[in-house]
Amino acid sequence: MSLVLRPVGPFLTGAAEAPGELNLSVRLRERLFTAAAMSGEHRAALGDQLRAAFAEGDGEAAASLLVAWVQTWALASMVDEARVRWTQRPDGAALAVLVAAAEIVAQAKGWPMGADGRWPEPDVDWVMSALDGARPDAVAQHHPEDGAEALAALLNLPVIQGAPLPLPPVVSIPGEALAPRRAELCGAVARGELAAVRLTSPPPEDLPTRLAWGELHLESDLQTQLDRFGLAGLTVNEAPSLAELLSPAPPGAPGEPMRRLCDVAILPGPPSALRAGRPRPTAWLLFRGPHPPIPTIVEAGRLLQALDGQRSVAQAAQAAGLPVQQAEELAEALRGLGALTA
Amino acid sequence: MPSTLTIIGLGPARREHVTLEAMEHLEAALERGARVYGLAHAREAAERLVPGLPIRSLDYLYGMPGVDRPKAYEDLAKMLVRRAFEDGLDVVYLVAGSPLYVNDAVLLIRRLCATRGHPLRLVHGVSFVDLVLDRVYWTGHRGLQLYSAWNVARDGVALDAETPALLFQLGEFTAGGDALDDRHSTEMLVELRDVLLRRYPPEHPVIILYSSGRPDYRSLGRRLPLAELAEGTVPVYSNLWVPAVGGPAVEAELAPPSDGLEDRP
Figure 1 (cartoon, rainbow over the protein chains, first blue to last red):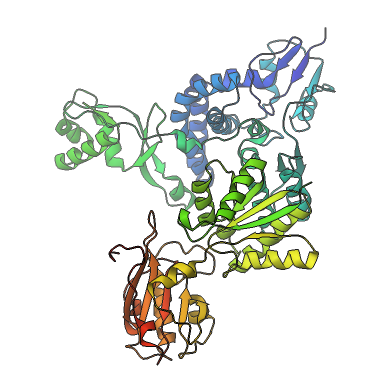
Figure 2: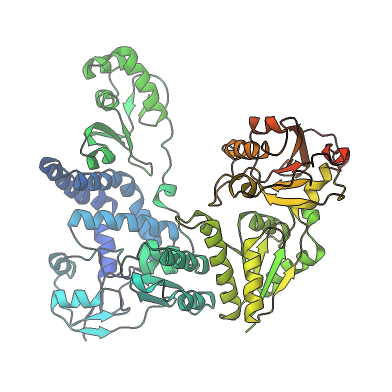
């Protein structure tokens, strides 16, 4: 019996590998889209890259890496549930988390995004390890943009045609073709003959293209999802943004002694200052839950580091080298942010 | 294929100002699954009138960089005509007020359909002018000038001081369609005041006519000397009544509310 390999893209829902099939999408999700990987190997890899970027004075790279690194806290708390939900059925919220996680994975691993533009294309070493010693005979292509050809080339395997994916019809065109084909494409979408249009290159900035892009989004109920999530987006009707899935941490309880409810890191930043080449020490409050990371002043970070659940605020102020009154004000503010509790 | 295009005027805002014909068309549009389009105010009104009616929002045209209103209306008109008569769809375009009052997109659609021989169904609606005039006494004896405040303040349209004038969209301050808040309306009011002072004396009475907004949409009015026109802000859809110099005295009066309630802004 022959064994076929299924590429990562387009990352559709479903958990099972069919008999005679190795599904890299499933294996990638189960091995790298996990809380353990997010808070372990991905965070560590991004941290190493971030330190290197700081050392090289590469503000642009450092800013991008810093944004990714601080996101690993919230994503680690959300990715397991999202993965499980996504393997069961199309789910917009789960997809929003997985797309954000995919960017972290690609950045941490240094992998490019695949043909679909949303999911990482693993290198040959990872693919070989994911095969667990199996030797596939071919790569099955289920969609022109599922990355099968690149994977086949990577492994020196032939491509065979797999069953087409049950996706609404989409056409792929270069960005510069959008304005000239506006009437045809938008008409096809309005008539229900086409679900959305995928651009294979950035669209020009000119007015006819912007108007065409606007009309396309007016007519297509799935265009925004395709833009955000690639082909997998065609399976969900709507999806929140990652920011909408994050909420502020609840305030801590008043009293003493206080202890930290989040991790703290003091790094050059914030990202905008890194990009501008004028970084300053910034403390980050990093919550182990679905809460956004919060940049704050270094004094707050030092105070948090000193509050260990044993010391009073006055003692922590002394340890952090802060005036007691400032420390008390900071502690109250940090409690309100959910970073401290009695 | 249906290939129909219907424009429905929804009246100024209140449900009771929607015509029976417009309601019938809205309900029929829902029933037959027409492809319905609308800009902000019309969309909100229709969603209240016929819950569940899917309406595609054309608001993106207002927010698009580099697209002024004339371009937005031109694009909108061509798009809807194409959708109906090239794509063969059952298209409904919702507009606030009357489709026939200062609606460039509707005008373009009418012209496009006429020149190309396409049938167009137009469902009339109550105009804002009907509501606005209920707080003044317009005799009609000297006619009426109807302009946007923008035309007078910035486009060089000169009013005839011996004919009463109704200037609409008094709070408008940009050409891009994003003039929904009133904070910058004094810019327009200052320009308008200065232009009007060239033809009218400072003490000439003018009446600001506006709506109380949700939920009652009462017609409200404020009479003041022209010289004081720019001393407060006004919502974008406010209007200015400028009585004629030497015209009937009654045209310079603020009429009481027509809804039987006290005049409390």
